[in-house]
Amino acid sequence: MPPSRPLLNRFSLRRQTSFERLAHYERLMLSSLSTPYEVYMMPILLDGVSYNINTFETIPPEPAPADFCEYPLVLVHGFGGGLGVFVKNIDPLSAKYKVIALDVLGCGKSCRPRFPTEPEAAEDLLVEALEAWRAAMGIEKMILLGHSFGGYQTTAYALRYPQYIKHLILADPWGFPLRPENPVLSMPLWLRVMSNVLRPFSPLALLRAFGPLGPRVFEHIRPDLKEKFADKLDQARLIYYYLYHLNALRPSAELAFQTLTHPYGWAKLPLITRAPAIDPEVPITFIYAHHSSMDNRMGGVLKLLRPGSRVDVNIIPHTTHHVYCDDSRQFNDHVIRVADFLEPRITYV
Image (tube, rainbow, N blue to C red):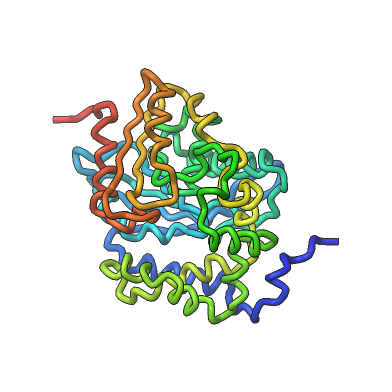
């Protein structure tokens, strides 16, 4: 007998969503791009099971500019996101890189398997899915960028498959700090109460519970999001419909995140104790938000724990956790600057 749905989902208003509706809003998000691109499903095979990974890829100019980077830039979104959230970054970055983005296994339009309920096994599936996707794409070496939970996944990937990474970029990554002995002491009372009430439910169950009212509720809770995307999207409210349909489908990687998380948001498998073991030849760039619940001290700590290896730490002022869209200009500049650190290309005269 299949496991029952999470409790709050059983009492949800009727959800009006589908992969087709998600694809519609994804197309609207990407329609603001001026860079030529294609979106397709990349099939991968894991332990004899086939999955499809929703993939976005820019079409580089021909001939490529002399300073065009020879390594593709792969963008990995965070919790509750999808490849469309990078819409403010793709055009500027595509002047320097071939930009590839994907919906992580269990997210967006990608297949949504049932994840293991053990943290190590859940992480393993995410990492192996990313590696199977890389192999299927034929990428020999990449600049790998992960935001938030995507930063956790890309760091875990770098621990296992450093040979495929030319540079690792971590944008306000989740999952680095150790859990404090008394984590609740530093939390406001309202947050402790809310966390305890919602603990039995899957993380985004409340959004699904509002059914077709979800986008409007989302806009009421996060009115700032339309401001972040207003300069890129013709209809700024589109972001709420895209995010709603990303997360109104059956939860999958969302439950993997829950498996990997202690109450109040700390990782069960913290990266700060593991990331120092990443191959010292892999340079790492942190791009932190100034105002965020992510601990921006972790970049400096990792720098101390990796003597002799390149670790750069950047903090963009006046930004929150979604640093890539809060100040996309500075964020894009930091990402473009990474190409200047790479070994020189052969040029022809």
